[in-house]
Length: 191
Image (cartoon, rainbow, N blue to C red; front, side, top):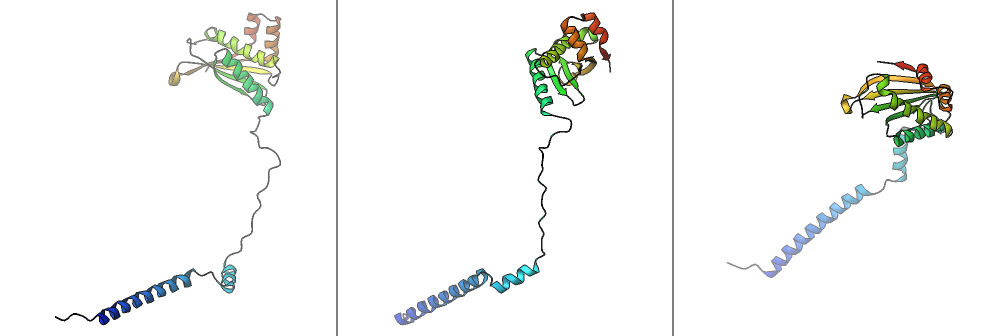
């Protein structure tokens, strides 16, 4: 067998390298052609083909949005009453509405409530909370309603509701009314 001559091998290697170089140059040329930025004429044609969008202006609110029927005074006093309930270990919620009603929902967990007599000690504590907040400057309600619930967790049941005017509570605290006169002025409703 004859051995290839070195010149033929060199020519073959140089030919292959030349062919690879030519292929690389072609690929680079294609990539550069496709990646080039569009000319100004091409950009103008593209922009005129796009639909024109008109920006819509979002109205800027002139006032701070609030929840209807809620003012900062009501929220501050609601927090004051809730702190008073917490201090007396009364579990429940508080809401003061713009119709001047302080609504306290109280959950009796220490004893069972079946009637007004069963709930009276918790209701009196709730009235004391309302009066204390009133005397500290939260005179934003003229009626107090206490809804009474009892039972733990998912066994909790609504038992009764007691409503009283603040005027009657203020007279009771001042000693003008005794406990019996105050109880006679309560509006008690059962479910």
